Image 1 (spheres, rainbow, N blue to C red):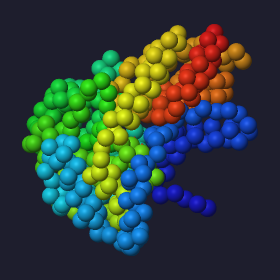
Image 2 (cartoon, rainbow, N blue to C red):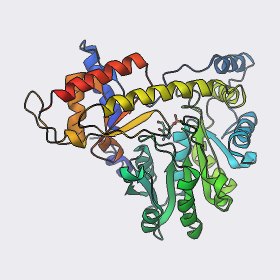
Image 3 (cartoon, protein in one colour):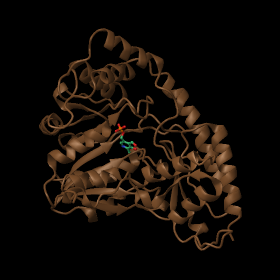
Amino acid sequence: PFRPAARIADIGVSEILQIGARAAAMRREGHDVIVLGAGEPDFDTPDTVKDAALRAMQRGETRYTALDGSPAMKEAVQEKFRRDNGLDFSAGEVSVASGAKQVIFNAFMATLDPGDEVIVPTPYWTSYADIIRIAGGVPVLVACDAANGFRLTAAQLERAITPATRWLMLNSPSNPTGAAYSEADYRPLLDVLVKHPHVWLLADDIYEHIVYDGFRFVTPVALEPALRERTLTVNGVSKAYAMTGWRIGYGAGPAALIRAMAVVQSQSTSNPSSISQAAAIEALTGPQDYLDERRDSFRVRRDLVVDGLNGIDGIDCPRPQGAFYTFASCAGMLGRATPRGRKIETDGDFCAYLLDAAKVAVVPGSAFGASPFFRISYATSQEELREALARIAVACAALA
Ligand code: PLP
């Protein structure tokens, strides 16, 4: 019989994908389901970017490239860090992979030995913990308080650090909460890290360009140069440039780490797609003006969802600084009963009820290590969001 390796035995397929599958099955049965679960922009990849890919194919750029990014791709990443973050990296400090997820996977595979700990603030993108486990490490989950905007505090970080800590994982703006760290939010955390030279920092900046209300995005290394020798700054084109399917992510950090990550990549996927690299070069170095338009469009939708949710008795939704998610509390729904007499005891029950009664698919906070909450991805049309909110309001009003 089939026997999975111990390293994956306890790792399930993500709850988000399961909800997506259930929603898809309901659609096939003829139900009109609105899915607010996907972690991807609803915009199309810009035409200039698609054209760059076509031209690359026509030029014959259809072969293997350098392992962790072509020279031109690495130059584009260097230019991005200079322009957006005021950071100078050499080509040897840059790694390009098939998505930010692979960059993170490479980093943990390249550095974690059995028992090594990685501090992961929750609510979190659950892939972090699963990648850490696959790599043999131990995720140390630290629950961040909604009252503190779901941000890690210096005292929490200090308490979580042990001699076995290898990394701290930070994600700003955050999936799933949309919370972002300002310079003032980062400062105390960086001060703690400076005092603990054995702890490395992985900063996942993938939602960098999706911030609102004048929020000034900063990346930790730009604030604390002392951490430069032990920080991997991760980013990618998936979210900002609506390129989730192209699979290009990148990281910048110490050359020795970058070389170790290349070893991992060399025996898994080798280079990221040559055509996608050509597209990503255009995304990173071409005109950036559409980023503002798209951000404004996301902000309108954020406000629509936050205001709509807060108008529902029993739901409390903070207004996030970034990304395209809301993370609302459904504590007020617990203990209520559905029209069919079933009691809502968890956020999972609440989300199952919304799917059943309102035909709206959202993801319970439990999928991100925090309850009782639910995440809405508002990367869909205003029309669909309005309809979803109306249906959620009706379903919630029917709870007794
Ligand atoms: N990091 C976070 C926080 C994400 O939400 C995602 C995608 O959902 C990624 C990284 C991975 O992005 P990609 O692998 O498409 O670059």
